[in-house]
Image 1 (cartoon, rainbow, N blue to C red):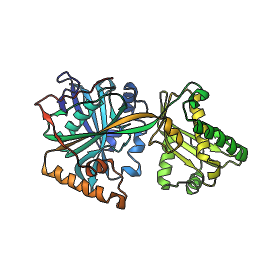
Image 2: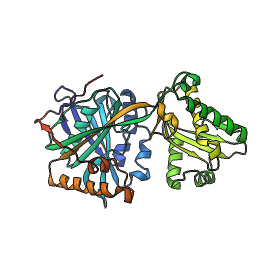
Image 3: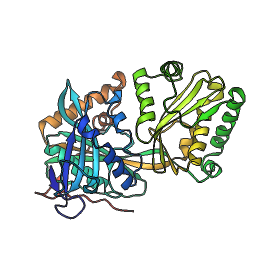
Image 4: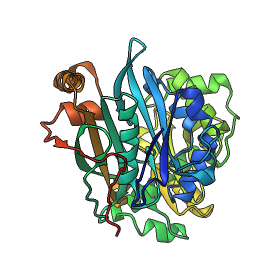
Length: 393
């Protein structure tokens, strides 16, 4: 544990660091409740999926809980947890590297904290990890544009830091009616959503199944994936499907024709009045009918009618409706230890950035640290107090 003050009053908080799939996954219910309390509904759902997905291989999860000072850390309780940060450590041949990062480019499910305190939470989490031997720590957190954020990390560790900002758009506000919601979209987008839905219905006479659950047989899963526009590894598709059916808050919507063939599936999760779309799979052969656009029309109508107020396309979307998404800003905070080892790692990241387009490396850490000539700043130090300031709107 690392004791300190994050939000202005000395010694009110302590950082508890948990590591490994078992320890982190055990806090999934607590994290979902914390996200709801911090007005970040949906940010901590499907933790079991993200710790099991193929993209997580070779990584070791870490969870930093910012808790009330003196609280029992052997069994964290929601009332004692103020904030949380979820990261992973890269492993090389199974060995720790001391390099920590988020796997969440959108800054959506990394830092869970009250509004206005995400920068401070990130600083304390980085300090806690450096105290455990970390060399480089990248933490990303999102906030609405217009929320000014200016801070100078004050930490116990001897370190350097740099921060960058980038825009992200993946959230659509939903109105009480479909008509009002469509009015938020561009004219051509509104036209296409209605036109391709009517056209598909005229050819296929489809039915939207609002709760597919586990109705699909194994051979149907295999067939849909094999014949889809963008097939993926079958084990990964099966995992996505099972999580949508079984994990808390998960949902699975399907579009089926009169012969019983599944044309499209949409999976994700809901919490409160927020719906998060994580994946969509469309059958091939319907490109002229724009099946994907038609399914989005069905999905949008379904969520509005069930009372959702916010629709999040996790990962964004190339669809034209993305032009109507709310613009948010993600801050990427990088802290590194003052050591020869961290300097060597920065050099390695630069080498990886130079060749990443040839070897298929898609890492936010490589892109930010390795792909840019950063102006590192020295972290200010105090003996016991960790301070950070974030301007409130």
